[in-house]
Amino acid sequence: MVRAYKGRLWIEVFLIRGMNADVEAVKKMAGLAATLNPEAIHINTAVRPPAEAFACAVPRTEMESLALRFSPVATVIAEYSPEASAAIAINEDTILTLLK
Image (cartoon, rainbow, N blue to C red; front, top):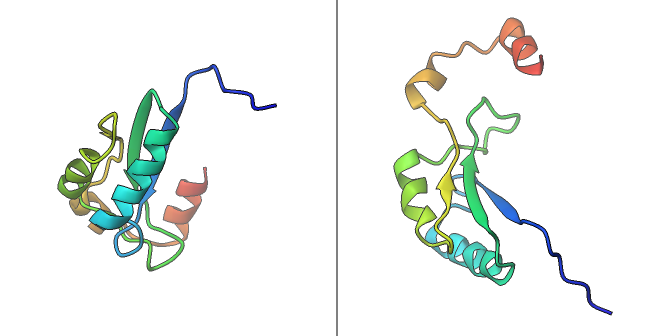
C-alpha cells in the first residue's frame, strides 16, 4: 500500500561551488524536487567557515539565477557576505563562539 504525505512540504537545497552548483546539477535537483510537489524550495550555501576547504560558498547573484530553475521558484535563504567572511579571524575564540 502506498501512502501519500498530506502535510506541507518544504525543501532546502544546499549548494557548494564546484560540487553541485553548476547548471546541469541544479537542473537535475530541480527535476527531482518537482516530482515531490513542494510548497516551497529554499536554496542555501556555506555561510560560515566550513570544516572542509572544498566547501566554497556560491555567490548570491549566482544562487538567485539558479533559483529560477526550480518550480516553484526557490527562495535564496543564505545570508552570505564575502566582505564579512573575509574579516572573520579563525582562532579558538571564533570557533568556540560558533559552537555556542
